[in-house]
Length: 65
Image (cartoon, rainbow, N blue to C red; front, side, top):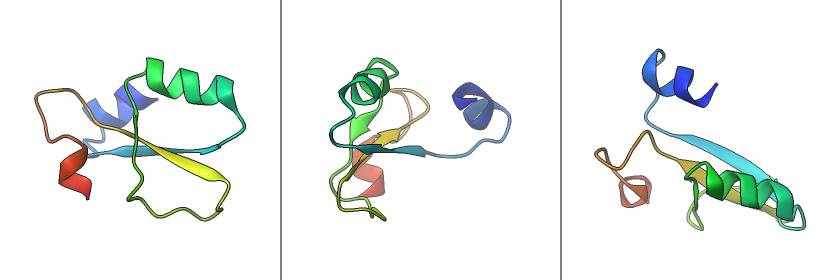
């Protein structure tokens, strides 16, 4: 789905909202290349926001600050 969103829908970024206790989901997001985005809005104070960007040639996390 991530590749579809970037390649077909051409969205600039995606985010994953992950409960800070969910270490397995955090590890998966990081393996997928997502980075913690402390500046992103969250609906739940217990959630961490991990940002996915299409690849290293495009804008990085700083573009979304």
